[in-house]
Figure 1 (tube, helix red, strand yellow):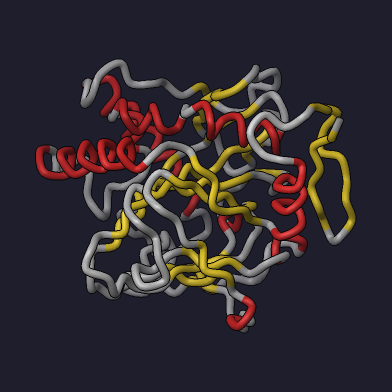
Figure 2 (figure 1 turned 90 degrees about the horizontal axis):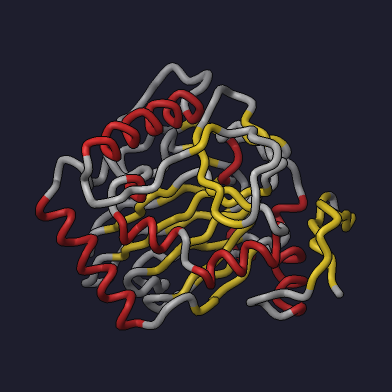
Length: 296
């Protein structure tokens, strides 16, 4: 039997008393995740299903450009059933249970799309910098709906960087930086970076304190990913105001988050209104203490 563990300051400590054999990951993969702060690739669904999801997303972009576009990319799973389906995919939730324990919440999703031959990039940062969660423990799952290669601007991870606390970030608000505040960590040892390459239908997972980035898409295809950002244990709290979360596995005994709703159909008025309310709360949290504010 293997306990869920998290490495903090190079000391391994128990995050809860849940002990089980992993459902989806091997014990070696569990250990690798907690040692390195990331793991890839994990097969979630096949390329045929990934293509179906991509087609549905691009259809949504064409038919409802006001709801799905570069500056309105947060929490689309509240209005599109197929994104909600991905967020609740049994393979993904088994992986999260293997790492976080039986009671798992999902705080949100973000669509990260880089058009071909464009300068958009993501600077070096840690996901939990401005999210307000305490303790800063959680996992981001990145779902590839198109190929994520070095050429197309896949994510890059700094191994073992999650063992540190939150590093100093500088808000740059760069025009081509698609992060919310353009938050940037200086002085990264880029030669240590690992390219997180994925095929459509594969996922990567990284700790919310893992330092990572991505470069521009220099390929001839779109780089399309859905970030399930982030999965947390039910015991984690939001400290910067009330926020919504979905209970995706097990129970929610602590009730630290407002309960989010799942879509019954695409673009239902209640879902659109709920997404707007959730995104406003998210924006208030992410831009807490900032003098500037973007549309995403």
